[in-house]
Image (tube, rainbow, N blue to C red; front, top):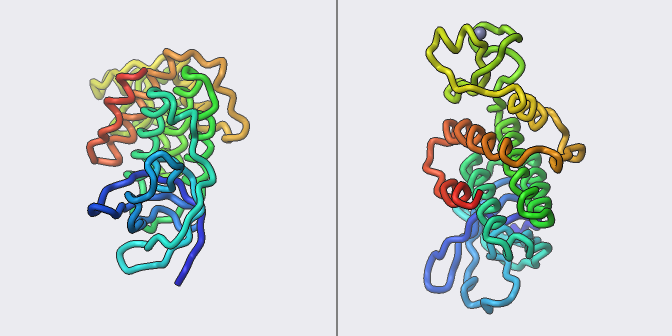
Length: 246
Ligand SMILES: [Zn+2]
């Protein structure tokens, strides 16, 4: 059976001398592996559907283990990302986090909308602003996969006052008393807590990250990465590259 869908390439692996397996995320079908026969024979300098992060319309046969590529056309190839090593690091991280957060054939339209929204912003923004979309993406990904950190009350006692520390294992804030009792004191400044709350609650089309301080955002990228890493339980190879670029 032939099916048609739009999808973004998260991963592209050589399969044989001429074939590739693409891992893509689509609005309609979720995360799917596509066997793309003779993909490597296509001219290297042309806009190919197997290029990382490109968004294409795919027409595929549904096979047993893979979707089999029949035809495709590139809709978007994010030249701003392809031409900046820092943006490339951000996009690689974002794509790997999505790949690791979903199983093959798992559907989630929100995840597709989220990655396209952030890729578009990273593609077009200046380098500093593009970094801020990593934090927004991390927080929204945690939220849609059911792992949003608890930010409005202490995860141990429920108190809403004196929230001053963050617990990575339980993914939430601690009040001063509980953080002392538990001997877990990862200081979280009020400003960072406000920013985390903003990232969690703001609808994508209402966000405005321009005025946010870049150094605060970099700290939060590290914090949110710890939360994601805890859930994913796989080595995230793109993270070190990303951090080296910040
Ligand atoms: Zn408490």
